[in-house]
Length: 129
View 1 (tube, one colour):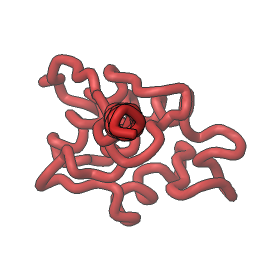
View 2 (tube, one colour):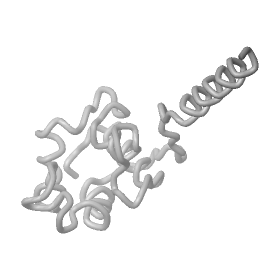
View 3 (cartoon, helix red, strand yellow):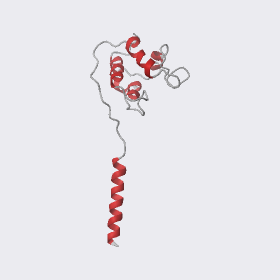
View 4 (cartoon, rainbow, N blue to C red):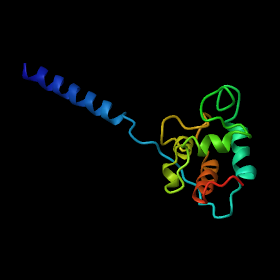
């Protein structure tokens, strides 16, 4: 009888170890070098959204918020509260793109270069330039 208790105890402990070891509590983000050059919304940010986000069924007119099409992206982000210039890394747009707030955007996966550009733009005041 004590042999059975040992086996059951071992299996219970092993199962708990497996369950706890498989729990995902952190998203690993590979950071890129910080961008120090001036970042332009029109020249640097809009192309990112056009290529990866403002696609049919995603962040386009009639799609998921925010609307990231060329004519709407800036206002959607800034007025919509997706940008925090006092704490750039807490900006929702950055959090989503970096995979720190749910599934990374774009859904193709984290793009460290895009993230570095977005972060630099926000740190530089998120200007509509």
